[in-house]
Length: 130
Image (cartoon, rainbow, N blue to C red; front, top):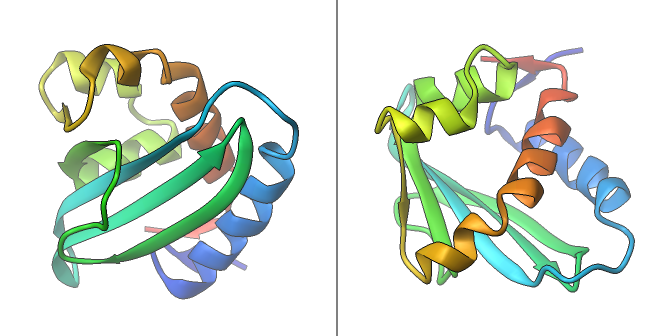
């Protein structure tokens, strides 16, 4: 059964899947946010994943401004939903200026592209209603 994108059931399902995907030790420790602009039922929403040495710690969401984070990817709801559905590549969206990286050390953030791609893959496995 499909769950509403960014809704509570979606968040719960994503948390379960992230615990499985990011369960082994690694090098990545970060808190990064996705900031969704122009959402259907809110001006701005956010999600944030926290990893500690490659292991899932938390995945949260909310409205308005996200809590403190190392960096954020900013795009419209439409852009993020296309990326999650696999209709658009995140790198292409970034190159075209449809997604912007803000905060923190930009070079350090770029080293996390593989981690962000894994997150996108996990999100794409959730049966989602957009």
